Length: 450
Image (cartoon, rainbow, N blue to C red):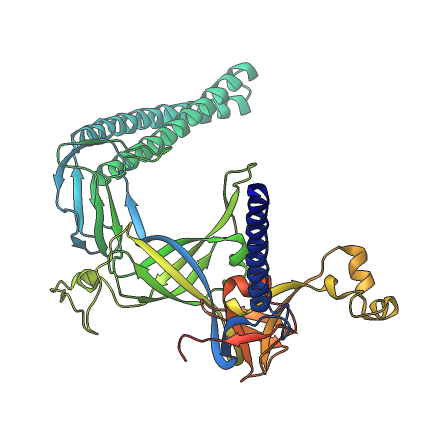
């Protein structure tokens, strides 16, 4: 009797578990739409396709530097005995910057002057010897014509005269050589005085009074200072090879400097490198970039302009008259406006996704229809046929539409064909758009902003 009761309880417990499982499965099937009304609706977000202006942007980062910067190096070696500038000073063309000790070069000039006088004396001596040889030659020529002296004696006098003429010519050349050495020494003496080659600001000063600098004609000498036009600054950025084809000279840019947060400045592309900077050559991380120079067109560094020094209004809330003070080496981010289209159909970038159209072949079309539409050719070349599509809301049903896209900005993309302005397209969520949503699915629109 007790065994029968235990078996009955066990049976009732199993039946209860089965009933609970059935109820759970029924709830899941009801929710999923397996029973009573077909597939479940997918909750999506939508937005209308609109006409708008789209500007394609290429973003890059780099450093600010002067457009024109001259490095001052000495042509002669020596000790700096006078330094008339400091870093940040504005100098004009021809203004004295520094002097190098001239004693050695002055002594060299004195030595060469003495050598020149010596050569001039030797030339006069050679002239006297030439005149004497000429007199003897002319006298002996008359005697030879009268046959009063032998031919040998005549030739000896002639050769002596020609030799003295050559000596005199050599003395003249030695004087020219001495004069050239003297001119070079005088030039070196003048090079001990360093003057500014152009108007600008001392952007870097690398020497002090009393230091020795090295100057050579064959190699670069010691870098002493740099003169730059600080009111003509530019940003040098690295643009990837995939984006450089879209960048052109004259493209306008928006510049954001780390030193001036929440502010933007205008710029223009002035130079695009033809040679690439390649890093990580031969590895999987190889990167190919091109240098692009962008002139900052917003007025800046006005306190350095042509030496007109005045106080720049620096405040926490800059006004329209505020002039930024850029310094070489500052970091900057640049958005280059490479292309702009006006009043074109556009949708949010996330609305455009891809779908494999090979899944449709054989399900909706016969083999003959596939061949007519070119699907067999695509399947022969690849097992996949990915195309860009958007999903349009048609009375609660997602309709897949193949589209051709154009340029894009940071938020929207141009639709060149497939859509018209005003059509409601699905924009989210990302998971549903990228993986789950299919043509003909029932959808439920739930927009946060509506």
